[in-house]
Length: 415
Ligand SMILES: Cc1ncc(COP(=O)(O)O)c(C=O)c1O
Image (cartoon, rainbow, N blue to C red; front, side):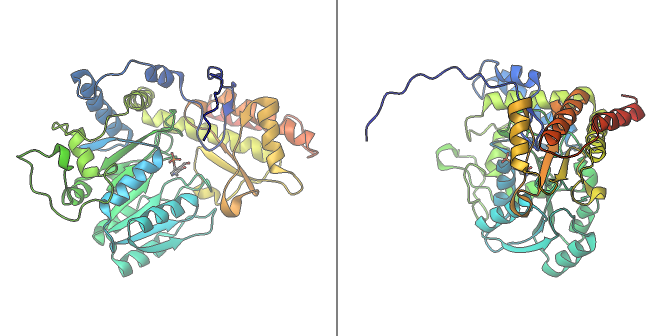
């Protein structure tokens, strides 16, 4: 192999893009500033203080009293994988609610855990009825029920409210992926009776991807504690003997991660300090704004975006009664080249909007109004640009209708 010399390339200088897709979105400038703070050793008392503050802040964001509320280093799926691999042993039964790409991801991860899987499905664009879930859970008697609250691939938010009680009745643990809704829609972990909920920073939390907030109930923690096996190189004489079947991943072993985030500070990995700074700042922003105000902001901006799109004559995708507040799916009108529209949005207006996956690839666009980009100016600019691009692509539109309709929605909200 030859090792050709490469130039040093230029310093990173990204274009000033407005990220209005389903995530990632532009990070809040305060989050970027926090990430540029100097590193500390992970056992430095200043740093462990930041870790404790982060735990306290995320208890508020998740609306929970759960002691075990912390961060998994990695993108949002690190939180999903840590949860499922730590709960599930080969042969354990799991019921998965699947109506989009991220329901399929739950399945894919549970398969890798060797679980016995029952999937309750709905068509992409719909949500699953509680009666079908109840039927499956009472028949299968699973250890875990797993759901996605806000599947960005379809823009639907599966109702979660009744699931905690349902799972408790049947002795199952409830896992919820709230990657795309935490900090933008209501995620009341304790009121839901959810046992593990995980998220990511790159959607409503206004940060970069790379850290996955997680919260665990006492029941979930007890289940995981029953599988505690401390890594050989760090085990001490006084450690409780190992028990249960060892968790199949070292990196995502929640028992060891809980030790790491406890007063013991048992050395697991080297904490991703800059990501912790980012996650802490994301949560500080939520707590400062207040959850009710933040949820209302996501609702109003999402509705203004939807009103503008409808006024343009476009059709919104899926069951509107169960739509996420912060991402909207739009059917690509027949005869319009969806990818060319996205390219023109990016090259002419510096705006990114999303397409979708699987059965929805080429059928819908997805536009987000999340976190830092959940703002009136971002909504109005995106609507104006989309209208201009569609007209340039030959779609007959009434000029200005979209922005006017969004403005009307803001007027009603007094914004
Ligand atoms: C609902 C949901 N779950 C999981 C993920 C996976 O997140 P990541 O790409 O950060 O691993 C995403 C990403 O879009 C998501 O929207």
